[in-house]
Length: 448
Image (tube, rainbow, N blue to C red; front, side, top):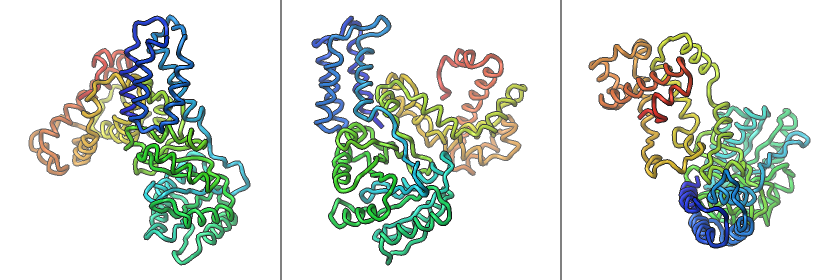
């Protein structure tokens, strides 16, 4: 997300280096570029105009502190304005109500509403330790009820069964009554979507809302629709008292126009970002962290939180103890590291959160082929326990068998073993002198 905007802003702000004070002349061209970058990112025109005026007002006449270049000073102004436009701070779900807390999900068909319910249910169960019940009031879309039932099973939450011939309002009321009697903390209500906004759809969801009086009414919208997403959210908000927005498919959105437009146009906070199809692909929306990511300053806090959530601490502790004792890093350890890295969004996902990612070569991200990690996992999975423990025994005949078993070529196996040897050297460096020594040994480069 924001790849194109980040690249344009990065080039623009670099041009101000070497000047001692921000003035109308030296930021005029920069702001023109910022304006074009925002418009190309599909940010709504009124938002762009207000943004540029605010940045200009704050930037002109600012003395540059000794430790900052004009480019860095303008970055700070732009960063602060990005945060303001997107909402200052994250807004948590309001669950401090008499149980069960009801969350009504609204949105157009195809926005990812049902998938988002599965992700949110998992998050509430795992992170907030809530007992969750999900129910589908979508009696129109074929298999909508069954889809939610499958998702509920996958994320280990309770499902309230409903039928297509039932009334959506009656379904919602019955589910909440069931939740109350069975001591559920949260009920997630999936409403019917449509291909476009129509009066029948709005009337039905208004009736559901009036009947269940939800603590939260979240509008789920596809971020790839850009500023149209903000306009759709506004139309829903006029018909329904929304409390927040969930932006989905953000991993496929290189522009980011929806994130930068929606708060300004609707006045409603973005509460979550949906990423990918997996049930753990839901991030809390932090405006300050997203602004830092847009400007190539990284998002270390999110990276650390993700690591804490997704890294198997027992495995990490065992590996650290093993390395400390001088035992060899083997292919099973390598497989564990690959799987944990994929769990954190792969190399590309981690790069986006690292500071200075805008300074990477233009084709660096294109060279990251996430599929190669899946192939490497397949190759190691095709090995015997003995081969994983003692890689040195893997000679020509074993390589041919491993390649055949994993659907790869012998040269792929050779490449994977070479990468393993490089990782093994890195681990030895860690055991002898820590991260500094390791980085010097590899000149700061990742193994390729």
